[in-house]
Image (cartoon, rainbow, N blue to C red; front, side):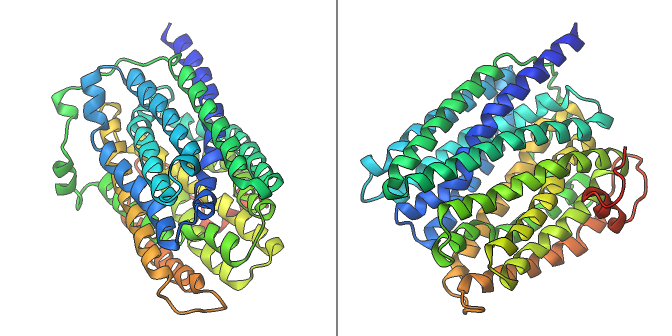
Amino acid sequence: MQRGAIKKSLRMSFWDGVFAASMLGLTVEYFTPYALVLKATVSQVGILTALPSLAGSFCQLKSADIAECVGSRKKMVYVFVFLQALMLLPVILIPYLFKNRAAVALIIFATLFNIAGSFALPVWQSIMSEHLPNNKRGRYFGWRNKQLGLVAIISLFSAGMVLQFLKNNILLGFLIIFSIACFCRFISAFFLTRMYEPRQYFGKESYFSFWDFLKRARESNFAKFVIFNSFFIFSVYLAAPFFSVLMLRDLKFNYATYTILITTVSIATIFTIGRWGRSADKIGNMKVLRVSSLLIASLPFWWILNQNPFYLLFAQILSGIAWAGFNLCSLNFIYDAVTPAKRIRCIAYFSFFNGIAICLGSLVGGFLASRLPVIFEYKLFSLFFIAGVARLIVALTMPRRIKEVRPVEKISSKDLFLRIVGLRPDLE
């Protein structure tokens, strides 16, 4: 009975993911271009990334407590996903209701949009983690993310082509893509109501406070992983919010070129995430995280070297390969490292520090962006250089202190990379 319910739940989850991925493809990469159209400054672009992450982080600290009070994880996820869809309605109407404060209004409603999603995410991840055994998570989520990545690519590309076609009436273009995104999120909320929720007992032994987590930071392997991830994400977001600014404002790329470059990341992710997942099941998540973090550390330097769009396609392919492994194995490491009863709380604490890192990185990057000296014609390249060095320091030093939590096979970093890009046979 339970096995059949889980199979049905995985199908419903997949269809929820299809429409959620469509919504994300139509929104996340286009909030910054929307802000630029609304005359946002570079500092406001940084805040647009920072404030939603900060607010979402604090909300996730309470997600486990709310789930316990509600008594149904599925019900909680549905309510907050529905609210997230609603938050896209005022985003659509900003140019018509907040003409003089449009950029500020976008920051506010993007923050509310992210808060709703932040309450739902750890609880949904907790449910999904109980549908799959440890030795199949990498393979399954690799397959799932590959399929949903294709959906996101179609949405990304379609949104970019709509904006390019309506470049002379760009606000109409944004109204169209955000309206479709809102509709998709409502549909994904419907499929969430069809998922199966395994019973979960919230006993006293599964509870540990935020302060308990901090006290154990020195000896806890999971806490060390959270610290590594937080420092790395901080270094990433020193520069991450400003690649769109560089492309659209400084390099004067049109929406078609911008869309092709950001879509390339998702395409590379699709072709490699399955290989990362199969490899992680055998060699462990930490090995993948060590290799992928080093690849991510190199990315800002590729942009400094050359700004030709054809050359940047290579940098974006490398980005997609690296982030596919990092994002997949960050979450799977948590699934392996903590027991089911503690997963909501652990995912929430992980997401809290992740959000704080995004917030601080974006704010510091926004502060530095207009104050650093020009190198190679653009001030942003000074910021990219600092971000690249910071990523490299974290990637080379901190993962060594974290232990893999299950028996795994040995493989060299070079051999792993060659297998992922298809130059050697895949791990089966």
